View 1 (cartoon, rainbow, N blue to C red):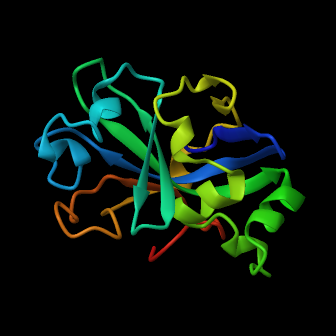
View 2 (cartoon, rainbow, N blue to C red):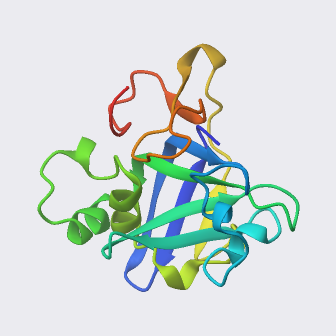
Length: 175
């Protein structure tokens, strides 16, 4: 998914960014994956067909966006952790008015959802049509990709399932 473009259209406009950081969550055996709790109303989207959104609320204040990836019934998703802003910068700054450095606008899963206007109403939606779309971008060369342990979690945190565009200023957290 690195190098693809995540785009979100809302009533106030369209904003997009190039995906520069992702983390994979790979099923019920992955204790960091929401599917580890089994199939519930909250996790139902993870069990859906590939190519739909899985959007959830964390810390009582942030939305997080994932793309469901495996066959229906096999819960797995890729969390988009950071974007390099592309279009709709004015709209992103309106949604995150206290941000002065563009590098801090979308360098985290909650930040990018706020900046793009992604909300829980977009959970379970196809990623091939509006309001939220992942479209082709510029491929990222293998030598520009780094794989690390996941961050911001405590369970299965050492699994090397985080992909970043090396030396990209918009990547979140520790490198």
